[in-house]
Length: 166
Image (cartoon, rainbow, N blue to C red):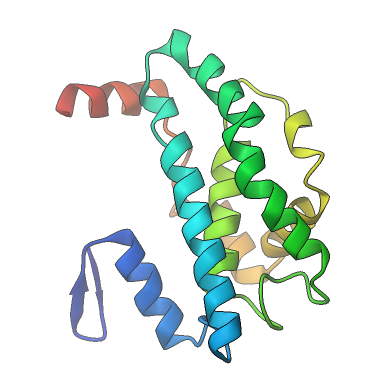
């Protein structure tokens, strides 16, 4: 639950979109807004494929992750990497952080947090890598990531609790 501006928001995407509207992170015109919407949707789709993996039985996690690395992840990060390679600012659209920049960063951060992988699979996405580094270097985001408010990658105890609950 996010309580902000007298509104109770309970869906994470609704919270993100509300904050993006409030802070002018949806583009300066229709073209930027459409680009931001497309990249945002792509990052949510990518995340939907990979998010269940930490909650699978231990022996299924690595094969499922590497299957995604070889098939799903390139379908999403390949075009986004190409888009970012043409950006003068390093951002998805315009000259500042957008909703798409936030969700791209969070989705890639999640993928990089998988404990059983080197990051060699990520090397071919050099523009996405620069984007992640640029986002991490932002003071407020960097401070948040170092704080106890930043949620850790789901460990086995958390995953077992979720599986038992569902």
